[in-house]
Amino acid sequence: MQTPPFQLARTNAHGHRDACCQPTEADLRTSRRRARLAELDSHLHCSVIGTCLSTGELRKLVPKFTDLDRYHASDLEIHHAAVELAIAGGAGAKALNKALDERYSGAIRRFEAARDSEALLDLWNEALKSGDIPPAYWAVMSHPHASIEVRQSAFGELHMLSHLVGAANRADIRRLVALEEENQTLRDKIERQQARLLELSAERDASVRQSGEHALQLAALAERKPDLSTAELEAEVERLRAKVDDGERRLALHTSRREAAEQRTQQDEEQTRALRNKLGEAQALLKIVQAECAALERATLDAAAQPDGQPDARRRAVEWLNGKRIVYVGGRPNSNAVLKSLVEAAGGELNVHDGGIEDRKGLLAAALPNADVVLFPVDCIDHDSMNMLKRVCERHGVEYAPLRTASVASFVEFVARLNASAQAARTGSPPPSAFCLRHG
Image (tube, rainbow, N blue to C red; front, top):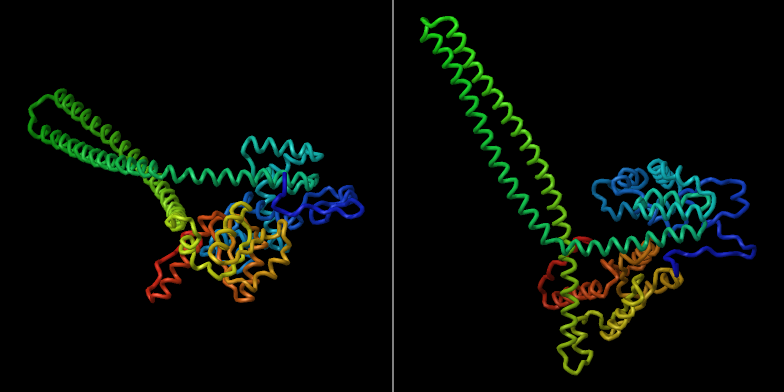
């Protein structure tokens, strides 16, 4: 794997790896215990906690060691707090480690059969093929024979799987129309079932009335025909009893059908609620993507409106960038180059820092105080760099803002909102609402 998103282990003069990444051979001979969560490299904590522990488990565990409210804190805040507990060690890291060991005890026992790195990688590859990734990931990361190469391999494969999941989310938007049609179909089905329930209830009431009438007929017959023989009376009574029994059987049948229809209706209502929730999430994501596409399209149309291709028309779409100094942390190399060209064409300055993968983090702390604004995409930055950004910016009074993705569209949409706010401030009219469903 080339250039992993966490620091590689360094070797000293004696050929040993750093203690934070790999124990020495002497340690392995004296103790073959599993690695604890706090002993792993800090860059691995995010993937371990995000993959192996659900949000519900973290909401029960993290508030015991932090001041977060388990009911009002967002999923991202809970996840950040869990990663910080793992990095800090202590009681919180021990509780997280215990939860992982208890939940994946079966996988840990299965991976104990591996006595070297090759056998461990074979078990990991089998888990990848079967799709049972969270138990195998924790068992590999904490295994006593897991070398830095094994952990890098597992982390890299898990990282690529996360990209595949992101691509699948984009397909959900295309299924939005199908979900709406399915939702309408379920509504029609529920209405038909409710009408059927009313019919069954009417039939049941009619059966009850018929049984009552038969009983009255039996009593009247006994009063009207005192001169009939005993055998005839008994035959008439048996006939009427048979009618009553038949009515009761029909009533029981209709009652069972009604109860079954009610259960099916309840299941359909629960399925409809789940589909409505999925539809709401897809619509929210669609609005965010549409806003970014609209901002990028406006910038492109402004640039195309100038026939000779001069940069003045392009500056109108990003007027706010003129004379501004922006620090951009994280992102991808290809999109970062486009952003730098865009800002410079608008008369601004963009300093890009990768968050500590290749650039030193000390340079990042020195560049922040002189910036007008600090931006970072939440999908391409590690937690350590994000926390350091917030602390330094708050200390020096520098504004910072997260971007939804590292794409050019997210950057242009953010600048468009700042342009709209600046124009509204000059004209005295209130700016339009720019509430983001993901970042607030």
